[in-house]
Length: 279
Length: 329
Image (tube, rainbow over all chains, first blue to last red; front, top):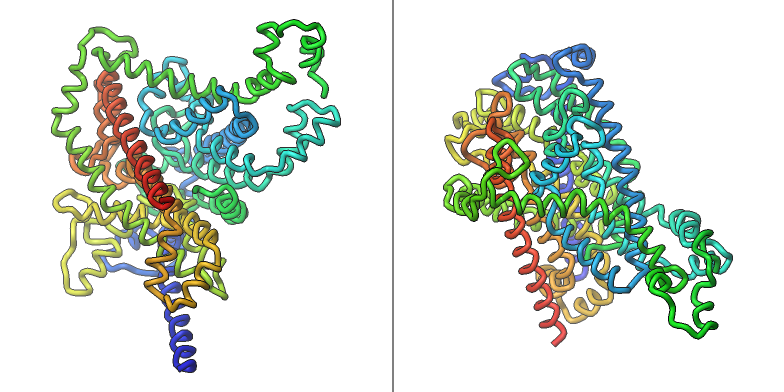
């Protein structure tokens, strides 16, 4: 009896790994397609019979993309980099301060603001894009980095995540610093923040990826001066001048930075989800 | 405890010693200037929320009662006309229907697949971290790039593309996936979002699974439970809170769908076909995308969508709370 169960358990483990391997291949296939198309010829991408490998790896697509004056790839990458880095930094600072204050105070103002944060969490920014667009254009911020970055940097999600994490942060550390004569501002930066790098890494990674990949808002507010890489690629894809190998070379270039960030920081992401928990 | 320079004055002690009630300013600042510090810390966030979320929403609500074409200042008061126009507009209604169809497909599918992956990975001895990363990594890809792959290489409606190529090999004929002649575009939309987001929810559910105490499983195993019965009577009930959060997030995200619809279905130079329009796409097309910007109509649409999502949120909250109360009884 026991031997039978042992064998069937082993068979089950093998089946599990086979299923996982098949799924892994499926999940990685789109990445493979980006690489294949980025180094293929137009003829191969539009060939009736699907080919897994290009006849020859064409390395010119990337250089052609960057010299294609219809696409402005270099400038778009720069705009995306500025947007993602600045927006991540500012969002994290604003949300850290607010999340900390909301976790450490229980008076009525704090409770009202906490409720407002959760309400804002429910009504996502995308739903209110028209009013925010109206506000941004009223400020004259169309096609500026301000217009691209500022309206999106007050994240109820980030504030909520930090608040949840600080609720579990031991108060003793702060109290020791306060007794030593530090004011709350210094205590926050010198004691609380250095001890919260895990959750900062997690939230920062999520914000960075969201910012780099954002499409709707950049499409609304950017013109030639600040167009981000996602908007550029989308417009190239639907323009009559589209060149498929160059388009996918662009996708490859645009996906690499965010994949690197993701691979290095996903440890924080997983831990962050586990500690704050979406319960 | 030192007060910051400039706000000195013996916080908390001086008024007591003098035997007087603290002044209003004193009380407003609070014990050890706590309120002052609280205000300082939350001010940037609060100000930003007000300026870029709530004031615009209020302005939009105001605009929604006016005719405001190509302007942000109201021109003519029209009462509820924008609302009644939208609610009786078959295109707006069909956009709500598109959302419902999308949600009905994507929410349960993502939940089941994420939970399936989480369970497949749980307790794995070898290569668990590797597989977790593989399923998680599509989260980093933008909807624009995913749509590019789906539209050009997987679900191309022409004679090329992986799926049509395979169909022909199996003796079938080409399917026009995205052209709107059939419902093929739903396959592309749903599979794309599934690929992109399933890993994220898998991580949330793995975290939820890890919080279930091991003793619960041991106790159940001693009672002879195994396999499906463990899943049905231990795992799923213990996972209820995480599941509720995941389902709510999925629903909110489905409601916001814009990027993949736009990038899969839009035509040359920013035109959008009449089919497969979720609410945000429709709102964009009628209020900002076209030549005649109508912000009054856009405002009314924003209010309707906000109201719908608030109703969802309240309903979800109510359902979870009821579930918890039932458990406690």
